[in-house]
Amino acid sequence: MQKTDRSPDDYISSLDEERKKDMAMLDTLIMKHAPAETERVMWEGVFWGGSEQSIIGYGEMSYQRSDRQTVNWFLLGLASQKNYITVFVNVVEDKKYLTETYKDRLGKAKTGKSSISFKSPDDINMSVLEELIAHVFRLNAEQD
Image (tube, rainbow, N blue to C red; front, top):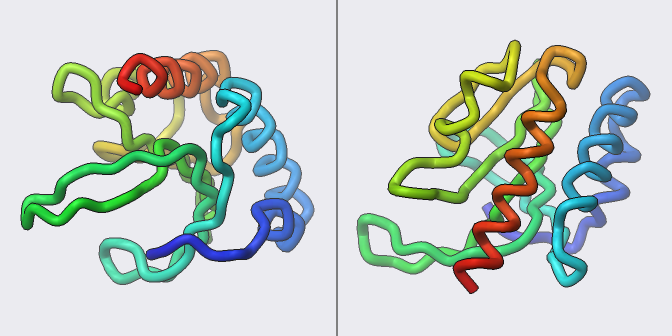
């Protein structure tokens, strides 16, 4: 998976009408809380598990994998998948992914260690998602 030159706006525009509306709303919500200098780029390619993905990445972080290789990655990601919209949260606080901290308050969402998947924004508690997004950028600013 790597950064591409594709525009996040072009990606959103390529989606079907209902998904386009939901993704545009979520993109706006994320950017509302992102610092002005936040990078917003497409990451595309084969994701863990072997699936082809297109993800809008917000911000950037570096981390060291278990093989000691340093990898650049996005702080927050937004993807339209076949059956879900997924928000990826790659920020840890007190040795715990923020997704794990917020999962019980999000509503009807499938959560992984660093992902939140839902069929529609109507299924989740948007104020809790917004709180989580703000927390991501606040923590990142504190760590810089």
